[in-house]
Length: 136
Image 1: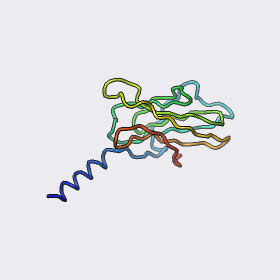
Image 2: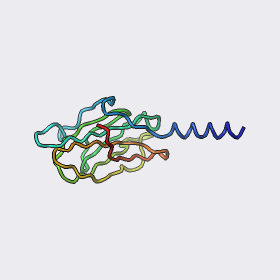
Image 3: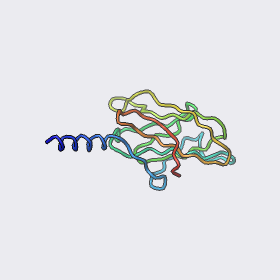
Image 4: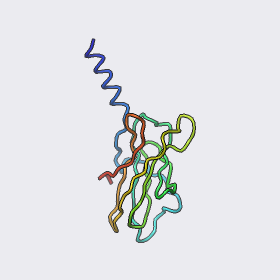
């Protein structure tokens, strides 16, 4: 009986975190007008994981405090930015069940002619975070 309970608990916990999505499989959404393609700017791809946690709620992606796009599970946005230091954030901006902890922000250095990919994920405590990924 103990083994059954431990197995069910492990299965339940494994289903409570999000998993990465390949950029080629993620559905692309349009970035706000400030982040559309511009010559000499660097593409930063932000991909939201797939998973059951908060799957009914959009997560808003920000760059330097400005909204880039709202992402549902398995979606991505490509934002074109000037090379240099950026503050990229992600969080629930909503109400009711879609209202969560304040957005998480992280600093990234974007180098000229070096595209970056970032991953928005939700941990087992339902905290939103954003980190770099090698997935393009």
